Image (cartoon, rainbow, N blue to C red; front, side, top):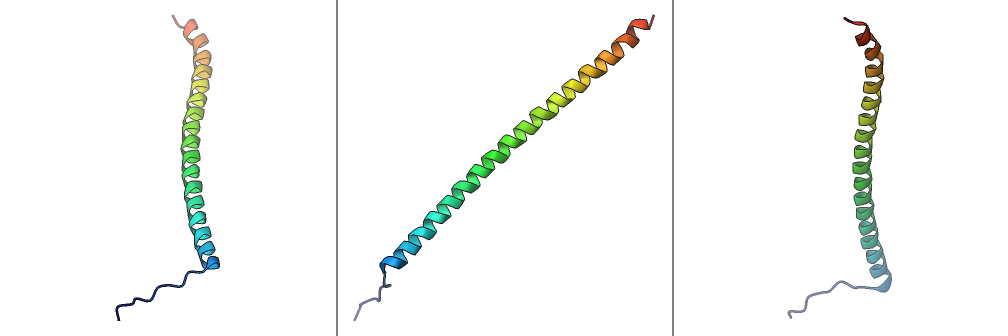
Length: 72
């Protein structure tokens, strides 16, 4: 006969399968959120270094300015 055996689906088995699927989705969402946080941290780090270089530039300019005023 052409009858195919089907898998027996019971309520606990379906609950476990749904829970696993939900856990996969939650981990995917968490991974995506971590990726966004890493990108924001990289941008923040670039801004921080630009600020540091700017402050160092101002300090050096103030240090060199009196030396230039004494030159003929």
